Image (tube, rainbow, N blue to C red; front, side):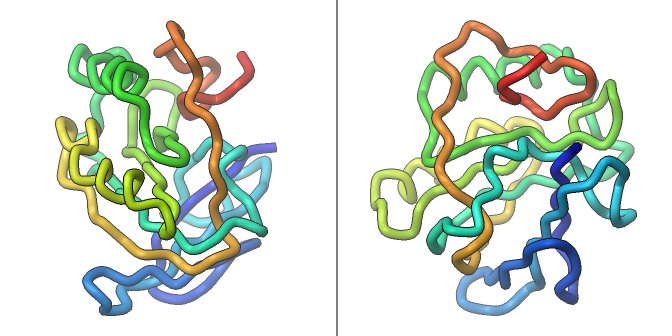
Amino acid sequence: MNAWLALLRQPDGDACGQATAAGHPIGWLCTWTSARRPHPQALRVDQRLLDPTGGRCRVSLLILPEQARPLADDPTAVQVRRRVLRDGRPAAVSTLTANATHLAGALTIARADQPDELHALADDPFRALGSPRLLDVDAGLFGAVPTPSGPVIERYSSAPWPYNRW
């Protein structure tokens, strides 16, 4: 079973949270747990991040256009994952994948009631790959997941990093 994420104009999926940017609604972050891709825009995400009991959060969401998606072992992509491990991240982090070889983006989560986590989003390492959007998201979608202690920075079987199994 895989976990999937998409930013959509209308709610769709197993769980959805309204996403706002600077107080303006911009759509819905929707998640699914499904063996197959449930929506054309859905990208794989580490399923440990999905938590129906999670509180409000702010996310840094990077979704790269298909033509700009680097190989997972591209030197810049590897350096970004190393930086995540070195610096530590807010509540949770996951790369987003669309296939077995390319990085499609990243999701970094900060809990709305944790000022240090919110501040850390300003220095999102995934900015080296593109321009992430800062979005406020309703409760009931994401939870906190500890970042692995390392040294693993690779993905396995097209699983989004830092997935806890090979």
